[in-house]
Image 1 (cartoon, rainbow, N blue to C red):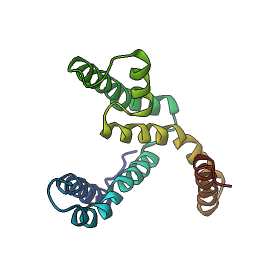
Image 2: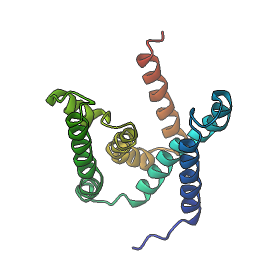
Image 3: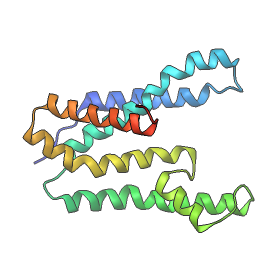
Image 4: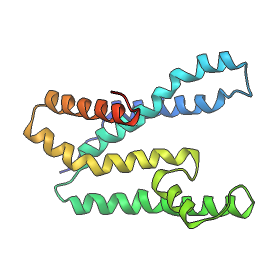
Length: 165
């Protein structure tokens, strides 16, 4: 069965790309700081928009075969990310920007700390890991119940992460 293209998602992707470009154009070196913040901060919604659209597209493309799903993601996203992270880290080590240690390399790979823009890949991998669970929950429960459960998990995470009581 062939999936039809959703034009509204394509349009949103274009808008989010433009917003990301604007984020990088509005730097603290280009304008006064207060003006930059006023222009730049609302554009950060594009980051969450990309993650949301990735989830939407992923839920539409998730096959019945989980092995196929993960194999494709591994070969097209995780492996190139790992190669880029290793190269980036080696170059930074060779030019003296960072001391090479195996531990630091693993931290860069696992947490996306190898380059500022690599965190997005880690967020996507997390989304890939929970897609089967979310899909099963959506098949068994109403969407509102799954959203409520997700909100409860997120609030709990924030409370633990920020040590709130």
